[in-house]
Image (cartoon, rainbow, N blue to C red; front, top):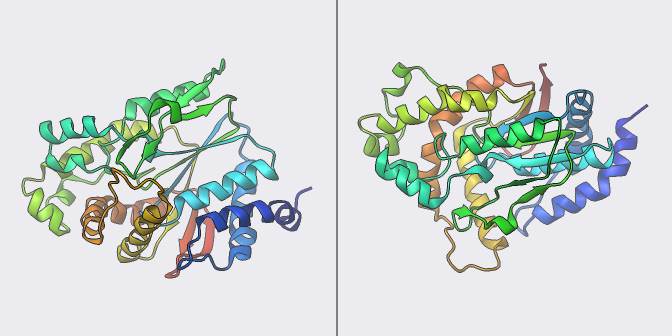
Length: 307
């Protein structure tokens, strides 16, 4: 028989060690005990009870800078350490198309598609193939892409993720995981300066929306459950994303050929995410299995289990 207290005593040291590795002098985690005890351990237990399906595919979504990577890493740690499950964590970001492919896309479809992030800038066929192979009865070792945001391109194959054993759980995290398409009427009015200035004919919006209607719908149909990190508003996400970019700069030792963004770049970058993010504020709350509500201080305030 499991208990929160027993679980916490076994995972606390490793969780705190990971959290410490993510902190900077100016950016410290607060209420670590509460986050782990009250929220992450119950979610881990919920996941563990669903592992009859092999593997269980759990999506984890949330806006830019909401904490997806941190939360997914801690859930992985708890599931492995206490629940003894083999967990593989992967980000939709790792499946971004190469700079070369996005450059071609920007020339043939729309210039905004050079900017990574929106549906259409990932290699969906590669992701679907990954899910097919991970679910195969006769599992064989896999190599999965890894993306280097500091240079805005994929790592060489020698640095890709390797999966030697079929996982019990796959955590698939990403800002648009589980996103749904809008109606054509919703696309007509620009919602920010990027859309107004660079997508006057709505060509980019329609292309991205069509991706959600078709390929990404099939992709997200692979999920057995969806966790959602719900921020209060888009302005908070922008603030958190700026912090994230500063942290990336501090953590990158080799700064040669870096593609780190300035504050202005981040603001423009975030505008390409805004439409889908704000739609997910509505849709993901309805369609998620578990919702984690974030307060203004970037902390989980409460959770709600729906499925």
